[in-house]
Image (tube, rainbow, N blue to C red):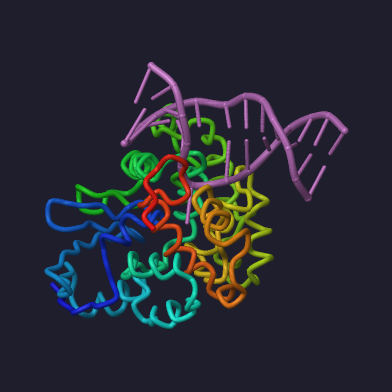
Length: 273
DNA sequence: ATCCAGGAGGCCC
DNA sequence: GGGCCTCATGGA
C-alpha cells in the first residue's frame, strides 16, 4: 500500500467525469482498471491509499492520473468575469485528464454515441468480461485489438452495442491489421490526428476529439457534445474566450462535468445559478 | 412508460 | 457547407 496526501485530486470526480468508464465504486473504495492492471483507491479526506507500492505508483499510476501536472495553472486561465467557469471549477476541483490507452478510448467513445455514461460503462464492462484477459480472477483487462477482432459475433451482440457493433468490429480490424497505427499516430499534429481517426467508420468529429483529448492527451481539443453545446449557447453566446483555447480540453472538462451533473441549459430543469 | 443519451452517416439542397 | 432523418439499447 502507498499513501499520499493529494490536494488537487478527487477519485469520485474522475470516476464520474465521463472521460473513463472503468473507475467504479468497489467494496473497498474505488477500483481502477487500466492497462491490464487493477488499483484500489480509497481516501479519508485528502489522505489517499493506493493498493500498490511506492515504486509502482511513481512509475505508472502517477502518470496515469496526470499528477505530474499542476492543474491550478489551467484554472488560472479563467477570466475574472466568467461566472460559469468559476462555478464549474469550484465544483469540479480534483478532476484530471487521465492518460488512458488510446485503443480503449477509441472503442469506448465509438460506443458512447447516443448513450448515457452509465450505459457506456455497462457495454465497456461487458466487452472486458467477455473478451479481455483475466487479471486476478475478478477483474478483466480491456480486450486487445486482436481479441476484439476475433470476438464471437453472437457474444458481441450481448454487449449492448446496438447499431454500433459493426463500427467496433471494423475499428478492431483496422487497428489489428495495422491500417490504423495508434502508436505512430502519437507523432501526428493534432489536426492530422483528428483527421486520421475520422477515417474510421463511426468516428466523427466528436468521437475523434474525445480520442485526441483522452487517449492522446491533446489538451487543446474540445469535444462538443450535447452538454457542451448547451453550455456554449446558454453561457457564452456561441464562442469561448480565446484565452482558453490552448487548454480548451481541460477547461471543457470542468464545464462539461458541471453542466451534466447540474443539468445546466436543460429546459425545465432547476438552474443552479 | 416515454424520453433521451459525451453522434454519425446518408441523403438532399 | 447546412438541414433533416434514421440508427439499437439501456437507464432514468
